[in-house]
Every structure is written in structure tokens, then in C-alpha cells.
Image 1: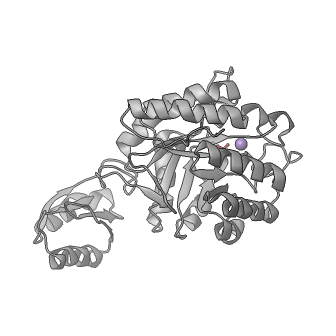
Image 2: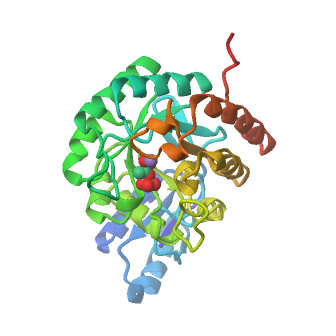
Image 3: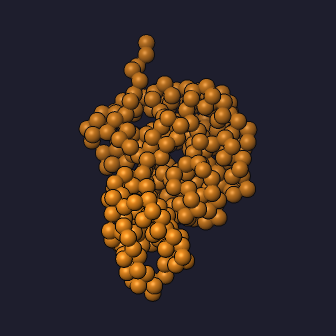
Length: 347
Ligand code: PEP
Ligand code: MN
């Protein structure tokens, strides 16, 4: 349920409503809208809804009370009609400008990571990605460098100024990862690790939440609700491909999810065409399609020698191809009324 206040409602009237909601035993979440305040009321069981709605509708300063049909309330656009932007340092995600997150799948060595960091920075990327804790299908595969990898990422940030996006897999690692990360990534495999979601929800740090390969859009939004309910509203949603019967690509890019998520939620939406296709040759076409479909940005994997990569080499772009992609991406962004600043080629 959301309580929509009148445009000119006074702070006292807003306080009065918050108090009434708490008195009735519910949790109020206030959205500081530009035009008017909207108060989401959480914890309503269906049987009580209508009588409670009528009670709140009669309070001073209330314009109307709307019942939210979606099972995800805080992530829903019904409860928050204005778009949310997530700020990471100087970067604003979800506004008019397109955001590009780029970097290696895994932090393998200091040299490899710093080389990619410099290259993607020069090409115009806004954030650096890189995994120090890697969720691998096989326990015999490279599992990431752990804290040493986080230190390398911190050095790359120091060198380039790019904020760091890195995955946290386990609630026990969260304090450590949060000390280094600018954005906490929750990977596809952990999208429904509800304890992890609740714990990142208690941090004051943006979260990049990736869709599980076997999860519906609705499940992604409910996972997001777990984070938001703990108080952290800075969630960025990321489509990264789903499992289907089609096996010509690693996953199937659910491009539909981009406009659906933008329609159903107020949060920024990104696409990861590296994981969704699993093949560097298809990364650029899907990245362009995502921006044309309304995504707020992309996350792509870049490696100086993909053939030698310890994870996800086949889907990693070489730095030169990443640079080309940035130029084409800026044209598509302009064609759909968005912007992407790409530095002029040097030399
Ligand atoms: C990754 O970003 O490297 C990753 C492991 O992604 P996903 O969780 O989408 O598989
Ligand atoms: Mn990867």
C-alpha cells in the first residue's frame, strides 16, 4: 500500500501519517518525491488491507491511498513513480547518461588488472569490474585471489580513479569486500541467497544485483526487495542471460527484461552481454541492442589476452575491440536521446 500526500502537505501532516502507520503496527518508508511525498506501508496482510487503507485515506494531508498489486513493493514503480539514480563517486547511474562498467572477469595478477584498468579508463569506461571471489562451477577452477585481489583493485582505482565493482559471495566476507568495493556485486548464483541480500541491505553501499540464470524478472525484483527492506535503496539491476533450450550461446539474452524492468521498477537497469552470450563476437551487438532498448548501461568483460584468461576468456573483449564498442555505443546512445562521453582517440 502507498499513501500519496497532497502536493502542499505540511511536514506535520507527513509526520502525523508516519505516526499513524507506526501506531497501527506497520513499517512506513518515505519516498522524498520532488513534487509530493509518497509513504509506502509494509507488512500488511491481505485481510486488513481495505479497512486500513480507508483509515489512512481520511488523515489530514493525504490525497489518496493506493494498494500495490505487485509482491515487490519498494522496488516497484507503483510505490515510487520517479526514477531512482544511484551515485557512485562522481558517476550517476540511471540518469540521462549511459554507464559502462568494464574490466576482467577475474583479478588474476596485478599486471593484468592494471593493464585492463588503464585501457578501459582510456576508452571511456566509468567503473572498473573485477572478481576477487569467483563463483566457479567446478571447485578445481580458479577461485579468485581473495583479499590480495581486492588490494589489486584498490591500486587500480588509485591509478585510474575508476570506482570498483566486485562480487561478494558469502556474508562472512562482506565486511572485508565492503572495505574495498565501491559497488557490491551479487552474482547470478547468489541472487536468491536471502541472508546475503539482507546483509548487503544493511550496508550504505550501492549493490549491483544480477539476475539468476533460472529466475524470472519477478524473482529478481523480489530479491531486490530483500535488500531494500533492510534500508539500502541503492540497487542497480542487471540482466545477464537466462537458461533456455537454445544452446548456440552460453545463455539467452533476455532483452525483454530491459524494458520490463524499467517499466515495473524505478531502479537503474544494466545488461551484461558478456555472460549473456558467452562469446566476444556477440558482445557488441547485444550491448548496442541493450542501449536501444532503454538500458542505463552495460557491464562487459575485457582481457588483454583472452586466450590466457583464467575465467571467461571466450567472452572477453580485447582492449581494442572495447574501444571500438565505446565509439559505436555513443552513437546508439545519441540516437535514443542519451549520452555517452567517449574520449577522443589519442595519437
Ligand atoms: C561475473 O560477473 O563475473 C559473474 C560471475 O557473473 P554472473 O554472476 O552473472 O555469472
Ligand atoms: Mn565472468
